[in-house]
Amino acid sequence: MNKLSEKIIKKIKQKNIQPTPKIFFKLQNFLVWTFFIFSIICGAISLSAFIAVISGENFFEINYFSTIEIIFFFGVLPLIWIFFLVAFLIFGNFVFRKTSHGYKFSSSFLFLANFGALFLLGIIIFFAGIGENLEKKFAKDLPGYKHLVEERQGRFYKPELGRIAGEIIEISKSKKTFLLF
Image 1 (cartoon, rainbow, N blue to C red):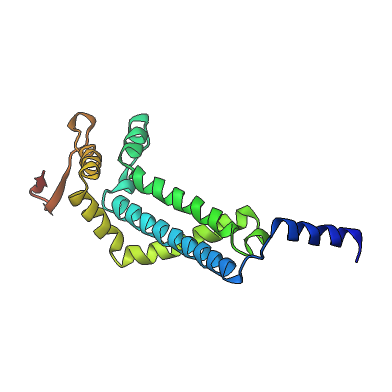
Image 2 (image 1 turned 180 degrees about the horizontal axis):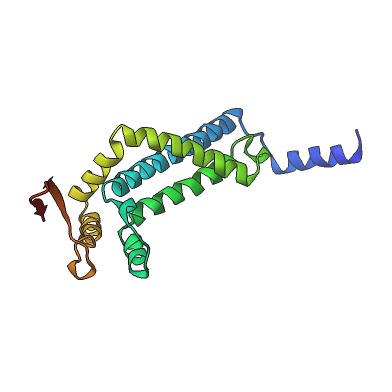
């Protein structure tokens, strides 16, 4: 043997170094993939809840974007769901890097692939109604979240800015009937 090999063997014997069992690496790999899948599912649920909120609040019926309307638009966005969506997207990218093949892909590819998977699953979850149900459950059961929903909905009723909240019941040529809340 050469000197380097002898030095290494001597050091291993001196420090009583034991090899790491294979099960440790298998368990580590399993946990990393579990966390990655968890981040995709949670991000998709966040996206689904976000879509449920904005689809129910007529975001896309704003005719023009004055400064007041832009402030209004950002004021009614469900920022908590955007935060969770971004957090789980970043967490998923970080975790995927820790897989045995994660180092092979560029960061931009990982981000796009992760977002694509999250987006597809989020759309499926939205059409299954899970996002809307989660939003309603949070509004009902979480005191802090209920306040955020009420504040967001309250921004739609500002008569001084030309916004009133309500539902059009009937439109006819002779009269218009509205239900305001």
